[in-house]
Length: 269
Image (tube, rainbow, N blue to C red; front, top):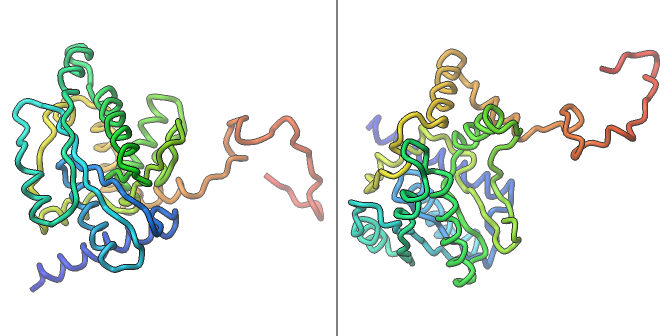
């Protein structure tokens, strides 16, 4: 009984988090055709499951099309996703494009493949989205991904940048959304076990050792263990930005800043 109660709690938490993200950032609107990108991992399975639940509530009138890109990785189980998607009665497409051979050929041995692999994958998915008249492209990044990206960019790219829950691509052709933006990875892992999703491991880039993201993840986990709720505070900071208290001249007009005399002699820091 306790297990069933816990299962119900994590399901409610995840659904509530997605509902809140949709409301806060207008992720889904009536008339949308949402392309849900599936990798076969826990995050994308969870995203599809929750979006289908939201669709059934009728609050938003939108269409779902599930899409997986078969990148022709050796040993990829081609039947797993089609069998699962058939079982839940969702409209889906399996795209086939051998990006694996390109990545292996272009990336030197020992270097991480994630960047090129991701770029090739996005190009194929964006092209298909345009052909299908898709209005929103849904990716399965969650809260922890967003926090990790913030620290990766700060420490290795010298940028204060994370992952927005919604953005328009540079060519302005597509709107990309992240419905799991408020969801904790721990809850997603538990939900995936509850649902018994047929997980397909990534043997191309996710299994490479020494990735900086894994180092960042470990660092953040250690912080959380020593200071519970630290990750929640960090995540909230991404939503509460003060451009004038940073140093980006593109965001704040320092040149034309006028000095002001504090009222009643009070000091302003």
